[in-house]
Amino acid sequence: MGNILALVQKEVRGYFVSPIAYVLLVFFTLLFGWFYIASLNLMLQLSGGNFGMGGPQVVNVNEFMIRPLFGNTAVILLFLLPMLTMRSYAEEKRSGTIELLLTSPLSDFQIIMGKFLGALALYTLMLALTGIHIAMLFQYGEPEWGPILTGYLGLILMGSSFISIGLAISSMTKNQIVAGVATFAVLLLFWIINWIGDASGSTAQSVLAYLSILEHFDDFSKGVIDTKHLTYYLSFIGLGLFLTAKSMDTARWNG
Amino acid sequence: MVEVQHLTKRYGSFTAVDDLSFQVERGEILGFLGPNGAGKTTTMRILTGYQPASEGSARIGGFDVFEQPIEAKRRTGYLPETPPLYPEMTVFEYLHFVARINDVAPGNRTSQIGAAMERTNITDMTDRYCGKLSKGYRQRVGLAQALLHNPEVLILDEPTAGLDPRQIIETRRLITELAGDHTIILSTHILPEVSQTCQRVVIINRGKVVAVDSPDNLTARLQGSQSLYLKIDTNGVDPVPTLQGIPGVVNVSSADYREGLSGFQVELAPNSDVRREVARTVVTNGWGLLELRAQQMSLEDIFLQLTTEEEPEHEDVPQPGASSPAGYEKPTEERIDG
Image (cartoon, rainbow over all chains, first blue to last red):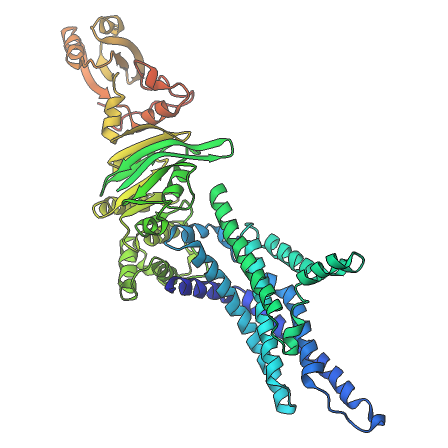
């Protein structure tokens, strides 16, 4: 356990001494802020735009502001999170430091968890910064707590899925650019995977729809924790970490 | 301490290590010698648990590196060919991280880091970033990393590569010092290093062991045939026919000619030491004997003999220099003539 903590701290440190952490934090909060203002404007239009109908209406902040905002956040993450994981293994393989980890008394599980939790820690910090925006909504409106918390849970789960796939891909190459681009492509594919479902049969459509990574997020931002979605994300994370372990093993044999 | 049995590593159809077996006793320094691509690094990577072997077994302190990798790794310190440093960490932070992943108890970390830094002479680099270090310091930080957790076995892949001559001497001295408490396996392509630091040498070529012995024994073993260097003043007489008449002398050839004096290379039959006879012959002929010495085969000669194509083990009489590849100059003894 202490070993995992040492690895997590090393990872987080690595993010902050390179520009990656700052670039991610700055652009994530910038983009989130942009979508925040956009959603706010949309909500204000909806609530205040129809005076002819008898004055301003009360609009549900959760439904018309927070839910679309979280939906947009999911898309930002699709673009940004590959940057978080692309160097994790690739850079260690390129520089040879992976040899230190693999010849130290660490299990593969510990190494993977160190990298996974390290990336997750920075991602959580990214999300924490958005708390400022949400807090302002509480200042001026009365949103419900429930859907916000489940929304964040959904973001954590979805982000963890992205991170686990990113780790798996990073562990397959020495080149971090390749890792980043491939991760982005795979995540994008999982986003649009149900788009071709429309023309095909209904069974195929439902399977593809089930696989789509963003499809499972919506319920969380509505305030619903459905075990179906929970299972999906947890399996996705499990699969990514399993592939990472297999890839480490393969690399070891092919050395 | 370290037992390697029938170790084989294949990459597809290429065999990098072929049925390698050797043992290293506690406190011993074993030198791993071989040309590039001989399988030195692969063997070391198997021993450190970085790679699995295709066949065979390796044990460190009684723990199988495949079956109980964590236990084996706990007892091993490893310096890979390129020191595995994180450029964004300072030397101290790096060593602290290494101490943590090697389960050094929190209370002992600072003292063990300090000891390792002192041993490798890097205390003045404590707060320097690893990425800013010179090659020599990188190598030494790598070494500090390997011995930080006081492992029973140290595996060093070319520990002196990239160091300047003074650092090389210091590093060799450090390795010799460490040998008492640690068992050391080091690989190198620098031959004098082996004869200076190692008690035993494993010469491998194309993944196979071609010789295991002490540097002295190796030299002795391959000295079935010796040659003498002879410098005499004959006042213009050609001494070659006379010298060749001595029993046990195989061939006499002119080696050099300097300041009016001829040096001769006298090759002898295996296991015959005829220095007395040669001296007597020279004296009875009234020539001036200026120099007479046995020429030792250097480790370079042995290395080349063992690793060249000609399978010199099957030759009855390995002749110093004779089976060396073309262009390879005979090493000369580091002695002053006259």
